[in-house]
View 1 (spheres, helix red, strand yellow):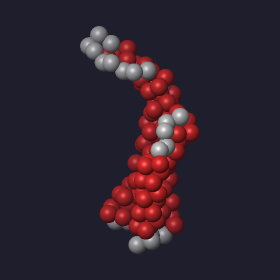
View 2 (cartoon, helix red, strand yellow):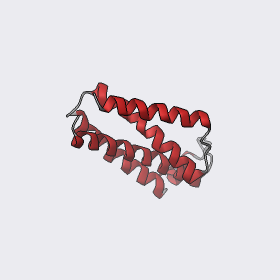
View 3 (cartoon, rainbow, N blue to C red):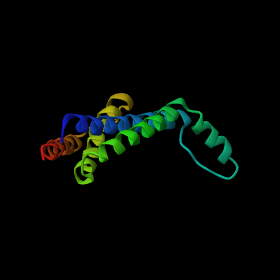
Length: 123
């Protein structure tokens, strides 16, 4: 895999992770959602007008464009496992931004993911 292809994959994965963090920020702004027929429109409007959610959806669209470019250049069996890098970025982002826990077990799992992606990228 060349550097350009790897860059498309990593950038797409990072955009996907940023999208998750933005969606979480928007969901926190909205609060816990309980949908009923009576509040479907009002809750939907609150969700749809959250800037972090709009930003997250925009990041998703951009990540899909980059992902399609990457898939045109590399086997999906190589590219798809690279999505696991998103778990790493999202875990650290959630820890930093939202105070979510990073236990020893999670850190070990992150190490295993990084080792696997590094090994896969070399094939």
